[in-house]
Length: 230
Image (cartoon, rainbow, N blue to C red; front, top):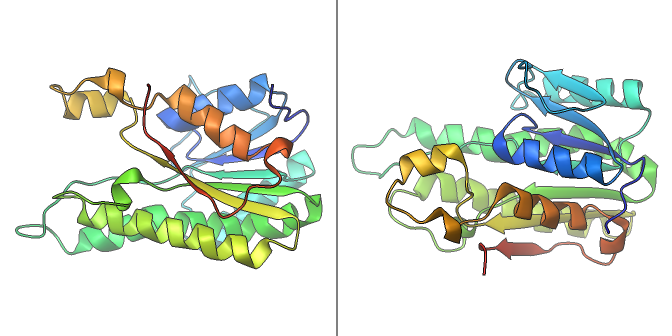
């Protein structure tokens, strides 16, 4: 059993499908959770000690304000799970060059800004954990995956570089690389596919929370493939 008892776990993108699964699992393991999201707080928001909604994490100042709110309200930050991001499928021919900027902003800048804002508090904890979400599709990109895969490759290089930067400072930095996640949107977009072969949000949450745990203190700089049920 992973022990996150009383750890303050910050989840960006906390209102999305994966964010909700991670929030539920973290609460079950004793964590105090803070969910940060760009969307307004819905009526069915997952239980948490703190919801910080309407936050544009592509803006460093807004990211800083959100992390300051968490620190002021909950007293510490032990874990940062960078789930906020976006996806597009678009070929270069006939595509919009702006999609490359949008994917970079949603996937790389959100992680960088949230991490930069949380980092002083993670260092303060003495045993901070950062877990990012890369993508298996960024290791070998398929047609139409260019903007998304390039941005997720950026997340992966950011993970490696930051792990080296922080390896002697008591903070680990890792990333999960999921294949297709089983969400309602992906089922709608790929009706002919077999979702039984995909990664369930609960299974991905379990891997992320292991990397966020005390038990994973010897793991940093890892890019961990999470490829689906076997």
